[in-house]
Length: 267
Image (tube, rainbow, N blue to C red; front, side, top):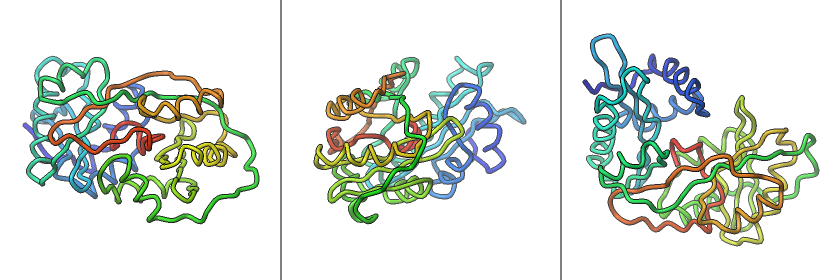
């Protein structure tokens, strides 16, 4: 039976996700439960938890993530039921476009539900600097952050931008921004957006200064400028997922999206 995702479900979910090799933290689930609890669901059978899913509503779009079924409960249709529940909730709340990133194992399931491929998301891994060098960037401008992000994704994603930009350092250009987030696994870069390609590299240099040894970010394959820049900086691709949507075709411009805000779970 589909039931609400409770605060008491956070710790066991994170433990299972970590065992699966996901980069995930309790703060993320707390944010999702605070902002869109209706779209966060758990499949239960008496006292047993058989699967989890979360979703987040932005303005006209939403994002589905964290679909996780324990190994012993797989191949019973639980993932499909969770997906249908989260998707229906987003639609009930007026979402026109639902996004997700799919692993190779999940692509067929999502296509059967009507999702369409639009891009690939590559995970790039590299190294940052040990010392924080001199910082030179425009003052943090929340309106610039909102406008640049909207130009890439075609929607207002204010709550997501607030929580992710509050987890580390933020640098802005006149028409660009970059954020860093700290995880146990290292430093994540993202969200990162730029309307002008020339502004992307100076911001990346600022973000890498003092970022530590391990740096990772999820980047649309459609942003060829980002790929060239990261290659020059010594980064390499360590994995890839498929970016998919269902519903109204989004006003998506990957050339303006240099890194996602989350590690695939929220956009």
